[in-house]
Length: 257
View (cartoon, rainbow, N blue to C red):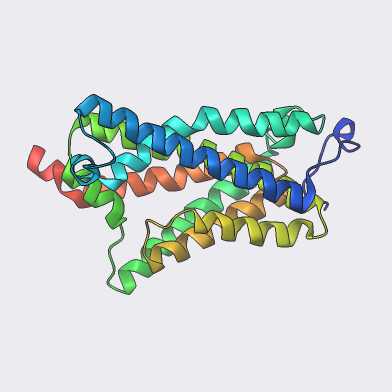
């Protein structure tokens, strides 16, 4: 079975290959940094804080998880615009370049079953090793501000914008270019997964290991199915479970009762 099946009409269009993809990836990082800085400046203006001389007081108002979720929502449109521009520079439609196409039923069932199995495996391993099942990063964020607005923000980010943004970047744009280079699909899965893991510096060593395993699974299904719609759905499922576990572990439901 061939990896990454592509419509015949698209096969003659060149992808960005390794160095081009790496260059655009640095540009995407610059966009992320710029949006993050603008977000901080806007929040500083809203709350009347000087972001340059009194940054600690601004940071103290919000949990890192809250800021991360807000950034995920704010980043989606700029990332899509930049990826779309990069794709057009090579003569591709955005949806074709990042493989936004429906997977086969067999691949869809396999992918979602694999995502569920991964959740069971990671949660089971954490239980056996007497480690917290829920992410402390998310749990602490919920405990710090257990309001409905915060929960809605986190749910929107974790289940919608984060899966969309991260999959379009890593399993869509980056995988496409690396797989078209001398790396080939297998190494493209590995390298894009390592880059994906490096973006999650907010987690501890165990969390980063889980992110790497997640990335390898998502990358493999992207390569086999040729569909980022599938990996977006898988990513959303895993994040939804993580969010529910964080809410349950935070104890806010017990206090509400």
